[in-house]
Amino acid sequence: MKLSTGLATIAALFAAQGVSAIPEWGVLITVTAITGYSHCRKPASSSKRVSTTSALSSKTTSTSTKSTWTSSTPVLSSQTTSTSTTSTSASNTPTPSPTGRVKFKYYGVNQSCAEFGSSTIPGVLGTHYTWPTTDSIDFFLGKGFNTFRIAFLMERISPPTTGLTGPFDTAYLGDLKRTVSYITGKGGYAVLDPHNYLRYNGSVITDEAAFTIWWTNLATEFKSDPKVVFDINNEPHSIPASDAFKMNQVGVNAIRAAGATSQLILVEGTSWSGAWSWTGWSGNSEVYGAITDPYNNVAIEMHQYLDTDGSGTSDVCVSNTIGAERIADATAWLKANNLKGFLGEMGGGSNDVCIDAIKGALSAMQEPGTPWIGFLWWAAGPWWGNYFQSI
Image (cartoon, rainbow, N blue to C red):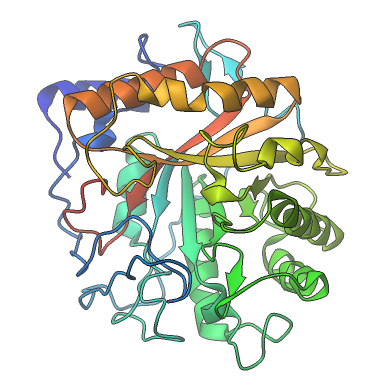
């Protein structure tokens, strides 16, 4: 990846002092201008909304070219995992910094590639999908990022022939575990992201018992790693907020019952979990205040894009203030309900308007008393190529 001289200076500040090092807005905004990473490959389509199944949206799934990285076994670093204590609500309280801004505990990027080719199940590794490269993970760790959201498909880890209650596919699970272990072994946080829009095999997930078993089984695989973060399901949509809430609560209950008691859990709302619609037409604000966790370590994950329809499919942002404007009501709601927020996806074009809009959003999220504990850029991965939000 190549950085301009000015952006490289910002990156150096970020790496040395953390995400609140830059006095004006406190995070590395180079993400909108990083280009030329040699391991990137361009998919045939670079729409933000990569459908999990053909029934999920009218946008087509990215059909990718064959990866040059075919090994499913990344070489693990000899660096040991940093010491971590049991996570509590106090540990997720944002930390004030000398600049007056508040540091995010979690700051990083979505690694999107294992959910590619979702119209072909199970698909072939290296042809329909791939996994994040260790080079990419090392690059971002070196720039000060500490969190990676790893998208994957439920249909690949739980083949439809045996369903949500059946055994996991050993090869796909193995690749997921190796990716996660590489990240957490270097001290980073790995967010498990079933990128399914609360659908499985083309249908909305409504079976509470089956979803309980699925999350119990997955949490059991990762419960001993305190640097794993559980994301219940990516961007539910076209269903009532109460239905999305119910299944998210089911997931939280299953994870805790499985013995994963130290890790952060992220819950998402309907309407693509948009911050701008959280207190409006989505209905999320009417139900998510009731989310419960016996270990008080849950955060509301929202996503926000800055183009006209909020889909993240255009590199034209509405204005240079739209970032702060679109998260303002959600921020107020989080504070009023004494809940933590996690902005799991945000992106924009590499132009002055979008960069200013993103700076504004991040600055607002780091004000004293902020409820926001994390921010992730969309997106990175070996097959995005010159997609306008790829880093």
